[in-house]
Image (cartoon, rainbow, N blue to C red; front, side, top):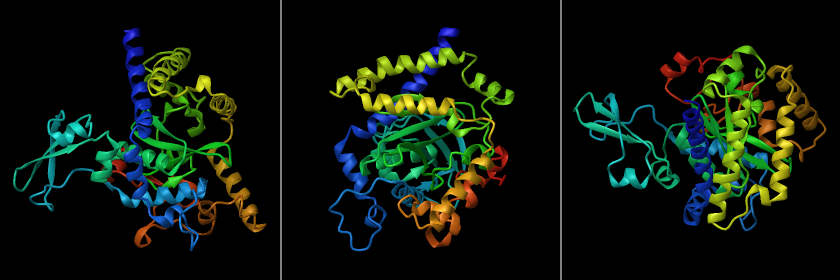
Amino acid sequence: PHDLKMENLTARLKSAYKTAFEWDEDQELQGLCLSVVPHEVLYPDVGCDGDDEPILDAALLARLSKWFKGYMTWVNAPLCPSCPGSTVSSIGMAGPSTQEEIEGKASRVEIYTCGSCNDTVRFPRFNQPSAILSSRRGRCGEYANLFGCICRAVGFDTRYILDFTDHVWVEAWIASESRWVMADGCEGQIDEPWMYEKGWGKKLSVMVAASRGCGLADVTRRYTRKFDSEEFQKRRNAALQGLSEEVFEFLISDVNSSYVTDRLREVGESSMHDNGALQERLIFEQMYLKNVSQKTTWDDVIKERRMREERQIQVGDKGEVSEEMAANISEENLGEKGKSVSAPKGGTGGRTSGALEWRAASGEGRTR
């Protein structure tokens, strides 16, 4: 049983890495991803002809995230092609069988039946970014996969964040700030690590980051201020199937030193172990995460962040204050047709993506 648990966790870690690894595999796909991003998102300054590389800062990441939320369509249940206004009911799951499903690397296909015409409706859960780019629909898995690929196409060093409960998102490396910044394409939100625990009321346990060059890293402490609590540790132990922290650390290290290294060598790339800059980045991040104070609350963090941003705006320090920061302070972030796409006052509102009934049942749709 112990070996089986280790195999299950290892498979999950490898799957997360595979997602991030494949974002760079297809240069044609990278070009397609870049082509769908509006010019004004990449170059907000009027008159910019786009000959220069976009500035890879938090402001660009914020614009990308908000645009992407409107670019995609969240699917709770698919529409029937014959009678789009009808209700469909889930009748089970199936494996991929059509050419589209197989080429799109659908891990599974949700099967529904139409309440009006009784036709069967298939909803493939694509894992191939090109298939997601074509359909422009899905849930958090499809959103994070395609958004990560688009961030890579734009130029951000990007990694895939696997939450062991039921969500995924990405982080992008902001070189000017020397840090990873969370970006959730489902919510159109960036740099709000408290959004899940404080805003959604999410019962977190384990979060792992996966990037092509850096491999895997446990980043749980970035997203919680309850890590040391008994309740959190019980959830984490259950998520790790009773395996110890030492075993989990070993599994991550083992995947990095074997699977990740082998995949990179196959394509002629060096691993983190051969890249001093990447290795240093990971070491400093792990030092930071281990020293994140669990005594401070998210309210303390948010208050300190807003006070700092307000001071920067008041003194006119535009170089240090992104568009996202200013918008959070001055007014609620607005998306298409004036609809809010991010929670005001620091991402402390409830979840906006997902079926209303599901959000209500999970407690993630409320404001805390």
